[in-house]
Amino acid sequence: MLRVTTVEQARTRLRGTVHQTPLTPSNTFSRMFGCQVFLKLENLQRTGSFKIRGAANKIAQLTAKEKAKGVIAASAGNHAQGVALASSYAGIPCTIVMPKTASLAKIAATQGYGAEVILEGDGFDEAQTYAMEQAREQGRAYIHAFDDEAVIAGQGTIGLELNEQLPELEAVVVPVGGGGLISGIATALKGIKPSVRVIGVQSAAVPGVLENLRRRTIKGVPRNATVADGIAVARPGDLTLPLIKKYVDDVVAVEEEAITQAMVLFLERSKLVVEGAGAVGLAALLSGKLQAPGKKVVLVLSGGNADTNLLARVIEHGLGHAGRYLTLRVTLSDRPGQLARLLGLLADTGANVLEVSHHRQGIHLALGQAEVEVTLETRDPSHAQEVLAAVKAAGYRAEVVV
Image (tube, rainbow, N blue to C red; front, top):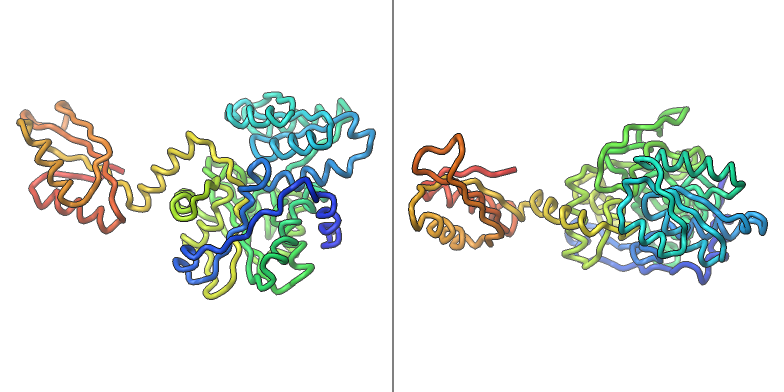
């Protein structure tokens, strides 16, 4: 089984290849949650995520013959870019198999790091099956995203950095998908300071590790849609699950609303772009799944490669769930000046009008009536309720559009 000495050897190999990412305190989140919160900024790592650590450590240990043949991997995002860049540094050929559904931005980024990209299958599982077949047929090294000791050890170098950056660390909160990141960090920290609590966080949409913690045989779970696609792994690894059982103190799952709120909070309060997978630690604090009063707690922000189109939708969804967006459907008399009167009322409440849609036809509208759908920016949930109450008090028939 993996030991801390293996992680220390990985760190030696990775010097000059990966960044030692900053560990920064967050006064805002510390006040919000009653503990001392620190952020480990792996979203500022090369390629925008921690994945290059494991990929580079694995590639560094390949034989000359293996390097000459090149490597192959399957990924829809961060692992693809990590393997591609690590291969470029090593000067070896690299092929990444990505599903046909992969975003154009991630395909372009992977190609930009020097990899050949093959699109195969409608999802990750099909892409991985094809990549492993090609690895066997061509005699190429397959770089697994998490279930490989060298990859796990590379990810574990984060734990060594944390121990040096914050020796009084009491708890670390780590995103969990296949388990490579948390296995490596937990192995490193528990080998140095066993008192440190290591807590994993999964998306409730794909709780692969949680579902398998009490099983003797590892089984996959359904892969439901989640904004935390970087940890949407149906089945933990044969190597990672035993390490999690041995070293990790707890694993919790968080819902989509908490994840999107966390992403928005990182943008607003910390000025950080954090992808869904990287935001689950903060989501655990927001949802009350994690409480550590007075403790020194590190949240590992595992990546920042959020698709810009998705990010725009996430911001809107997160603000809506937090009571910062309010959409009302209001019935008016279809007479001149009525819309202006409604908008004046809304302005008096302090709400900011973002969008207005005006309709004169509808099966539920009587003759002489019109319907307005107005989207507003509000300060918080209580302000949203004040706005709704003011509209109804003025005699309007109004309802909230969910």
